[in-house]
Amino acid sequence: MHEAFIKAASRLSKKKLQELHRELKRHARYAAYGSLTCGIAGLLWAYFTGQMALLIFYFAAALCSSLISYRLSAHPSKWIHTLARPRTLELLSYILLPKTRKEVFEPRYNEILEDYICAKKKFDSKWEIRWLTFWFCVHTVLLVFGSIKARLGDKFIHALTKIWLVFK
Amino acid sequence: MKLPTLTHLQFAVLEEIGAAKMSGRELRERLKKNRKIHKSGPAFYQLMSRLEEAEFVEGWYDQKIIEGQIIKQRHYRLLGDGIRALNETRKFYQTNAVGLPATA
Image 1 (cartoon, helix red, strand yellow):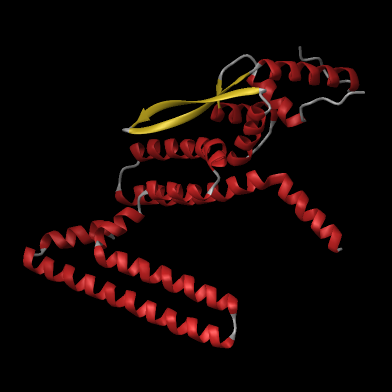
Image 2 (image 1 turned 30 degrees about the vertical axis):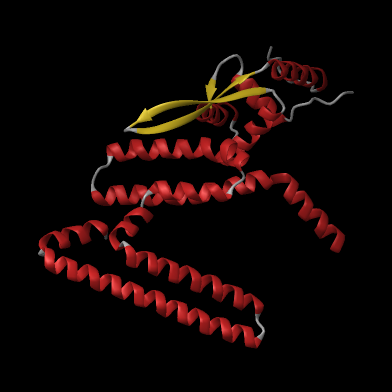
């Protein structure tokens, strides 16, 4: 999408491009305001009907969508480009404890990264790189969850079993 | 009868490392090929982390640069306590398991 945007943009004149950019920013800002308004309406509705789970969900959803839209309005093309980078996904690992990240996540992540870089050398067309990037991202996300599971591991499962036996 | 300090999985890992220095990837491949032990990446590194905590192995990072990107590789080698535990466990299996071929 980003490449297509740049390609299309290169054919336009500077004035037209500025106009388009301004319009895109305006629309994204409207989307941000819109989602915020919807969020507040949902929040009020959930508050008055007393559904706490719904209230939290609405609040989180509204906040996320307005933040994303507002960020998009500031730098539309840059934002998309940043999100598509594998490096951004590495940030996900920071939800792990430092020890887990260093000893469980990082060694395997570096292996995946090495494979990804080597594969990128071999396959260099646009769709091949997209495919590789997609799977690299999927593996990274799975790795984060795998690291949590490995760290919690036996102790967590034993604790759950004990709780289950007590209530049974 | 005193039970060994290592589990069967830890024993297999330590035996596979032996006297060599080995990267995590190489070690996993060897375990898969020689002993048919299939462990997922995080589970394997968690196992190695526990061995490091017990001071049976030493782990460190080596860096290499591929296409301008720094790649860190985790390497392992056996420590004195690891060799001791390995011998102890090997002795246990040799004396208690009938029909098990001697490895040392």
